[in-house]
Every structure is written in structure tokens, then in C-alpha cells.
Amino acid sequence: MSPRKVWAIATKELRQASRDPLSLMMLLGVPTMMLVLYGYAINFDVRHVPLAVRDLDQSRKSRDLVAAFVNSTYFDLASSVGADADLDELTQRRTAKAVLAIPEDFSRRLAERRRATVQLLVDGADANTATTLMGYASSIVSEANVDLRAEVEGRPVEPTVSYEPRVFYNPELRSTQFLVPGLIGFILMLTAVLSTALAVVREKERGTMEQLRVTSLKPGELIAGKMLPYLLISLIATVLIVVAARILFGVAVRGPYLSLFVATFIYLIGALGFGLLVSSVAETQAVAFQVGMVASMLPAIFLSGFIFPIRSMPIVLQAITYAVPARYFNVILRGVILKGASLLPYWQDVAFLVLYAIVVMGIAYSRLTRPEA
Image (cartoon, rainbow, N blue to C red; front, side, top):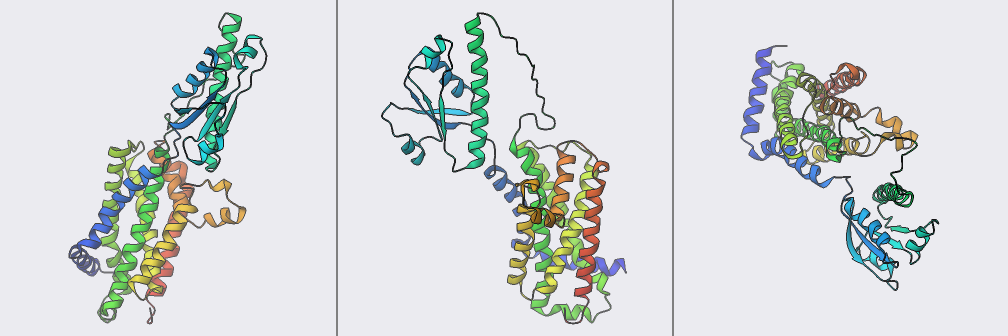
């Protein structure tokens, strides 16, 4: 393989990309725009949920309980309703996502040292949010019980078990810290696949692919020359995404940058190879775009652990995820970016990315070097 010929093809591809501002903007601007869009749009943090209160007791004890809910910052008091209010209508009109109902004998039962019952009605249309809200409410009521016991007994209540949680790597439990690394893998896969697929199919549409084949270029030199510019552009896009993640979302790379670069480089080789594979089966840019979008975007979102936990999927889908490179890249990214790890603990994930790149590049090479490709 002649480096001079490869560089000549790469220079031609870079010049052609520079003359197409729309494509260049797609390769450099769209990844950052997608990071901003998805980073702000996808958020699993549950805060400031509108809460309606039906307090039939109207005592100091009931007001203290309501204050505990509101002061937690998980709930915001949206409205106070009377005994004749239609609680179903409150949730149907989205006035409130949760309703706290306090009976009229609440304070009396507490004064008699009897069990006092309150009810929390939660809008379960969003099951994840509802589950989270019930967990928050349980914690708030538990703390209120401790305060009530201390007030009744006239002294601080010493807990039997001292529970002191400590969260590593994401102490604020911000969902963006978990989602942004996954977004990087998703965005890079999408842009790398589309860029190479469209570049090769463009040559087919213009009839210049056959002209390149009759030159002294070897197939490997042609493929390498086609890939090199988009590998460079994708690495630049990676830098832009990492910088944007640091500035906009406070997601800093805690691990070695060399580990991040090596993992990203291997991942991009596989993604670019998959783009070449797509170009070998597509004859038009429209078809290449559609096939590339479906084949790269859907697995990277649904089968990589980016949003949905793999362990919660059916066994068949769990087996399919082993063939999705974004699954392994997301594990590496979260380890390097959030945990400050090197590649050593993730050598198996790196090995799969290398294997995936070799296999995909081999298949793409065999297809593109056929006379009818």
C-alpha cells in the first residue's frame, strides 16, 4: 500500500468535503447540536413535581407534613383542595402529578399515639416517574416519623441502625452524568456511518467509482483514502463534543485522555467500516442515508444500555446486544469519563471493539472489491 496514493485520495476527499459546507456542517456541527438537544431533553431527574394537597385536618401536624414534602424540593405545592374536590380531575387536567390526602383525624390519632394514615395518589401514566415519587414520599414520611417520635418522647431518638450512604462518581445523582457519555457513543456511530456511506455512494452516483478502479490504485488504498478524512473529522467532532459536555453539562473527563482517544479511535474504525459496508449495498445516497440511520441509530439507542438497562430486556434482546459495539463503547466511556479509569479494567470491551472493527472492515473490503460492487 502506497502512503502517497492514500494521501492523494484523502486530500481529494477533504477538498471535496470542504466544497460542500452542508456536509461539513453535518459532520462537525450536528454532533454538538445533537449533544445539546438530547442532553437537555433527556433527563431522568425528578424534581419540582406539582403536588395537590387535600388537608382535612388543618392542624399543625398536618401542615408540618405538607411542609416536609414541599421543602424536599421533590414536590411543589400546586394547589390545596377541599373535601369535595375531584381528585381524578386534578391529575387528568395535569394540575398535579400527585395528591396528598390527609384525613381529618390525623392529629388526634397522633396525640393518642395511634397509627395515623395518609394517602398519596400518584399519576402512574409515567411508570418510572411514579416509582421514583413513591420512593421520595416513603423517605419523607420516614423522616417525619423520626421527628414525631422524638417529639412524643421528649428527646432525640437514636436509630438502631445508622445508615450513611455515599455515592461514588456521581454524588449529585444527576442523570446527565450518566446520559452524556452514552450520547457520545450514539452520535459518533451515527455521523461516522453516514459520512462514509454517503461519500462512497456519491462516487457511484457520479460514475467516478469506476474511473478510480481503472487507475493504479489498489482497493485497500482507495478504501483507506476514503476513510482517513472522515476519521480525522470524526476525531475533531469528538473533541468538540467533549468540550461542549464539559462546558454545558459539567461532565469532565476524569480518566486518561489517551485511554479515551484509543477507545474512540477503535470505535470509529468499526463505525467507518460499517459505513463502507452500507455503501456496498446501497446504490443511491437516499437509500444509504436511510439504511445507515436505521442500522446505526436504533441499536445505539435501544440495545446499547444508553437509556434502557440491558438486564431488564428479554433474553433474546440481551443476546442481540452482544453484537452492538455501542454497548461496549458506552461501558468504556462511563468508566474513563466518570470513574477516572484506564482501559485496563475494560480490556474485554476493547477486545470486542477491535474484533468488530476487523470483521466489519473485512466484510466491507470483500464487498467493495467485487467488480459489481
